[in-house]
Image (cartoon, rainbow, N blue to C red):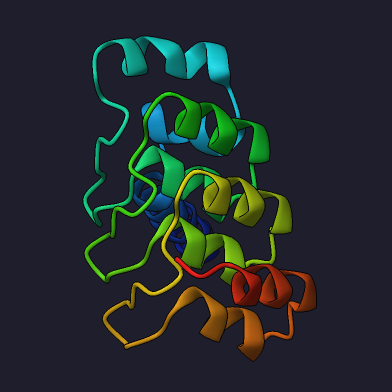
Length: 144
């Protein structure tokens, strides 16, 4: 009986945690790369909608390395230099998680390499920390 209650409690806590951190709505479409799913939100003018932490759909696309979605959002006017509540930009997420294709798209659409987050770090600082050589080269050759 105690074992059953224990497992039930673990299951409940896990479900609660997943439901709190898993993206939903526009953010799920952005992270999954579902362009058809995200289109109605874009048409309603929610391209730069923010979640509770200030992350935008473009940040989700960058965080999950979804280059086609990042390109789609940029083409439709997403704010490439928006910062979340901790000062992170889409470029920082793409550099941190080593998504060179996303970095290239963001730079092409005017992402700034000079913005800093709440820890005083730039996108290149994260690329250097994790030795993402291709991204380091891209960011060093960009002067925005």
